[in-house]
View: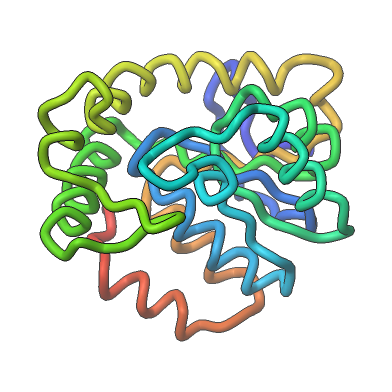
Length: 208
């Protein structure tokens, strides 16, 4: 049973997840962080879609190669995978039992994204396959992750309720979390390492 009717936005207590979970949400919402914490609580592997998709020099792998990796990663009886990659949703959602949607207000997600991007640029943090975010690409190009977030936020808000209303997806458990506070409370109700949640609290601002 779903926690929220996406057509009217009714709120109820978010249910616990199953063991095959896709965490989705706009850029900067914290999909990877939440996905890792959730996987640790469930005792299942965490799969980061960006790590499967990006080759060195920010080259996107061919779709057939990514599909093969996604197929392999989601064959088990338990996993958490993050990401909004619609091209591979047919694989992920066919095997998932739960979709967790981090549906935060745009200013919250965007500020988190700006902070994350600045941190990565300034520290030279190494990402997947030795990729690093650069100031010019991140802030001053057509490929800017910030521009992508602006373009896609409203689309995500329309897209996911419509997708989850389709009959083929009605079996999925739908967890819609609308704020950092709501996400924190939901994670806290799950069994697992409370220390990991404490680190998350200390590193990021909670949207009250």
